[in-house]
Structures are given as structure tokens and as C-alpha cells.
Length: 114
Image: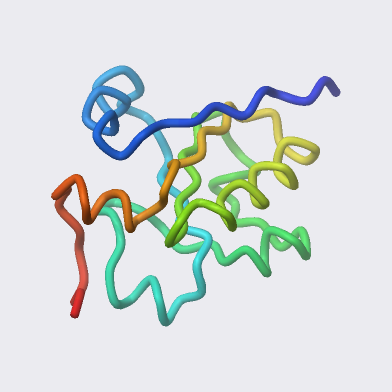
């Protein structure tokens, strides 16, 4: 299987990405405790530890939906993309700067950001 390219998106460009890819699957690779505090609306939590172990959610294995990988600052999301590109054929995009960039771009988040 040829490795798919990893794409990158800036936080301020997320609305345009959502418009171009309405079936985009938002995957937050932080741990559940961090996810509970704040996350992008409609995202699901699949921790990097599960990605690394190969314990992938069925939604990642059973579709060709494009995936946006999210973390706090972008590092874990990039690591997850490197791992997933060897395991699944889905188009992968990493959120540059992570949720911190979303906060700075004043994008809406769910949860309880303190």
C-alpha cells in the first residue's frame, strides 16, 4: 500500500476545510481527561496510545472518510498521522498548532476550558 500524503491545515482555515470535506472525521489524539476539558465540536477521542497499539476505533477502520488529527499543540497529531498512514488508506490532515491555535483563532470549543 502506498503511503498517503499527510496534509496540514491552520486553525483559521478549518471552516473552509469543513466546507470542502463535510464528511471529515475529527480525531483528537489527547488522553480522555484532556479531551473532557475542551475539544473541537463533533470530535472524537482516540488517544495516541491506542493509535500506537493499533487498537483503532471502528470508524477509522471501516471508512475512507478524510481524517483531521488534533492534539494540544500539533506534535501528537503528527505522530498519529505518521503511524496511521501505514495502517489505513484514509486521507490524513494534521491541525497545525493544535487546539492552542484554535483558541488563538477564537474558534468554538466544547467542554470546560479554564
